[in-house]
Structure formats: structure tokens, C-alpha cells
Image 1: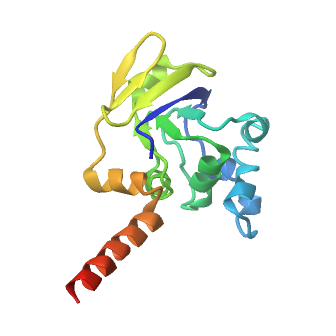
Image 2: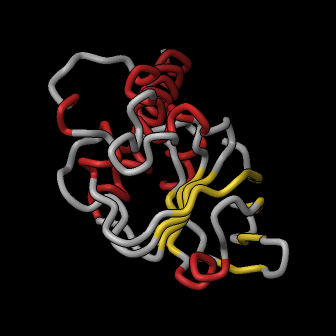
Image 3: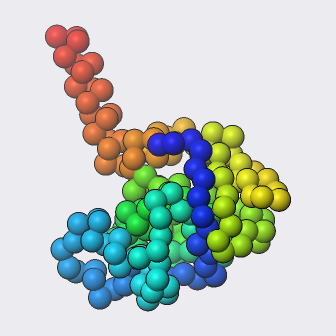
Length: 174
């Protein structure tokens, strides 16, 4: 995972539901993540999927990702090109799903209030900073294990890496 992200902001309001992040009508269709991304936010912002660029950033109000526990909502956003989500607050399960998908989810109400749609901002993960054209905001560092999950590009890769390290250690001991 990169430690510094810069990108254009897509700003949304409070209570963005998982059913508008990844529409429920696609929930039981077999899709690769790249196909899911084509439907990201289509019920909230129909132009999002066709206009989002690699490295863009979502900024949102309170309770981002409320609703169902479907991990497709986090995966669709990640594969759309979004690298970070900043919100006033997150639904707990969405926050975990984002981290498990390898996408930082940062809580910073002050930054959300100051950032406008279309702004260019920078996030410094190592130093816990959100940098806008006029301000700098801090956010708490993630715990070590969460950073390792993000650096592994998600929970599955994190676990695979742990297993490989254990296997390598066992091989050395034999």
C-alpha cells in the first residue's frame, strides 16, 4: 500500500447506504470485482462509475456504508479506482469490509466539513494527515495489524502472507 494518496474528491452526504453503493439488484449475480465497479454508486450518482479516475477519493458525511453487511459495497468502490474514503463516521461493518478489502477508511469530521466536491487533496497515511489546499487535518494512526492488512492489500492476502511465513519458518526448522 502506498503511504501517500492524492486525488480528486467525490463528496456525498450522510447515511449513504450499501444499497446505493452497490445496488441490491446485483447482489446475487456472479461478478468479478471489475464488473462490480461499473455499478458503483449508480443509484446515488449515475455518472460516478464512468467518470471516476484511479486515485480519486470519496469524502462523505455520517454513517457511510449503513445498511447491509454485503462486502460487495466496499469491493465495488475499491475497484472503481477510489483509494481512500474519508467520512464523519462509518457504519461499523462497512468500515471492517473496507479494511478487509485493503482500502483505508478514515474518520475525520473536521476534514469532511472543509473539503468540497472536486477538491484535490492528499492523505499521508504514515503521518496521519489530510492535506487540502487551505488546511491540514490529523487522524489517529491505525493499529499495527490494521496497517499490515492494508499493506497486504486486504485480509485474504494478509492471511496468505502469514501462512507463507509460517510455512517458511517450518521448512527452515526441518
